[in-house]
Image (cartoon, rainbow, N blue to C red; front, top):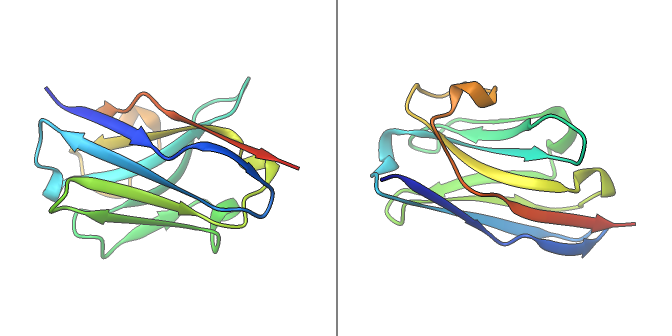
Amino acid sequence: QVQLLESGGGLVQAGGSLRLSCSVSGRTFSRDAMAWFRQAPGKEREFVSSINWNGSGTHYIDSVKGRFTISRDSAKNEVYLQMNSLKPDDTAVYYCALTIAGWGRTTPEEYDYWGQGTQVTVSS
């Protein structure tokens, strides 16, 4: 049974930083693409960033480019999202997701496994 478990969320002031982690169990994800999504209250789940199987390819939405960095450690079965210069608009529940369909996917429907989410709150 594949499980994804996020950690690292919390409350931070605008301009601060957080590092989210996602641990994958039940599957060796060394060949899978991974992503982070987020969902703010009353809004649809939004793609944030993805990383290909070996970390050589990454993709970000425009609003987080230059502030967020996605990375992975396949030996540990973990993926990370370093978030710097956080803004109140970044407030959301952040979800880790795995797709077996390959890199380049940006819609929730294209992802096969999900974590339970971790809350990120940025105060102004």
